[in-house]
Each structure stands twice: as structure tokens, then as C-alpha cells.
Image (tube, rainbow, N blue to C red; front, top):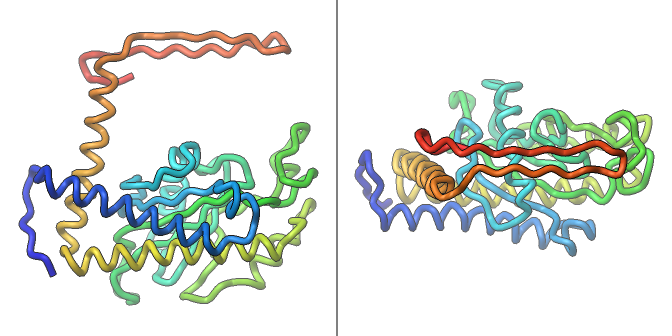
Length: 274
């Protein structure tokens, strides 16, 4: 175990070391997912993302995967925390693709794993979360691929997982997830492939859990948590520095239907916000 002393200001060298350690964990998760996934979308197109999150579900670090996944995955994790709270137990994995709770389109399904230091019922809440989001080849709906351009309800787009318990106390809930995939007005066309990709996401998350626990054992929990906050603070300051040099802007685009998309961005210099 490496003895490190807490401080209110990060050491620049350690900040860089920990930033890379967190990112490397997400990269390792991605390697596992790539190697074990079954579908073309994940294995060949690399349409997946992996990241680690703090105890409140805020993003700490991600691998350079798909930006739209990573920008919204934190909301999926926070939705799980808000919905389950102290009911989240060690050995659990949850599935979510609900677009109202941090999802994007329904084929992008997120597997979320809470990280506990030991498998004990006496630990009330997870210390971290890891998550992987993969684009399933099909998740039901009125057209193959689950991206119908003419759907009028979200049900016609496919199956919604809303913090679905995929693994309970270390046991994969295959019967329950298979039933969920098939018991739908527009069921999955290939549940076997769905299940295979879910297992790949579970494996990817497990690598993240193992590496975070290893990091805590080496550097101590207080230091790991502290530098998670420092990494987040540094990321925020980097964005604010970028905002400092921006100017107000606006854009208007007229669609074929005559509808107009209008966007305006105003830079607030005093509080360094857009």
C-alpha cells in the first residue's frame, strides 16, 4: 500500500497519474467488451463506451469512445441511484436504455455495476459505479434494428429497460431478461445475441470493478476519492478556460417542412459560463 497524505490542493504530478489511471480503467473495460461481444455493432463497428463514476453518479473518467454515450451516461447512473438508493446491493448489475433517464435511442443499452470494497450487507452504499453502453443490433420495435423513422410511440421503437436488475447477488437473471425481451408487443428478433452482449458488458464492468478495488488497496480509499474530485475539478476548470475565449453566437436552420431550428449561445464572462 502506498502511503499518501490528503491535501486541499492536488499535486500536479499525482493529478496526472491518477487521471491516467482512471482513464486506463475505462480503456481496459472497453478492451474486454470488444473482445467478448457477439454483435457486429459492438465488436466490429465499436459502437460502445465505458466509463467510471463517483458515488453520486458523476463522471470521473472515460475512454475515448462515443461522445454521445459518455455525455449522457452519467444521467443513467444517477437515475439508478435516485430510483434504488440503499436497495443497491453488492453483486448487482442493472440495465437501462430509458431515454427519459439518460438514455439515447433504445438500441444503446447501459449496464451499470456498483462498486463495493467487499461483499457485505453492512456496507450501505456503493463507493463508485462503472458502466458500459453498447449499441444492440436489435431491441425489438416495428422495424429491424430498432430505429424506425415512422414510429409514433416509444413502444414502437423497441423494449425499454428502466433500471432492470440483470444480475442479482452475482447471479445472472437469464430467465427474467429473456422473458422481458420476448414479452413485448414488438419483441427482440435475436434474444440470444442480446443476452450474449449483456454478458460481455457484465464482463467489461467486472474488469472496472477489479481495477478500482486494486487502486483502493494500493493508494487507500481517501486518496482515490480525493483525486477523483481533483480530476473532476480540473476538467471543469479546463472547460471554463475554453469558455473564456468564446464569443456569443447563434445559428438558424430551416428544415424541409418549414420548421426552423434556432440555437443561441450567450457567454457570461463574470461566472465563466455559457
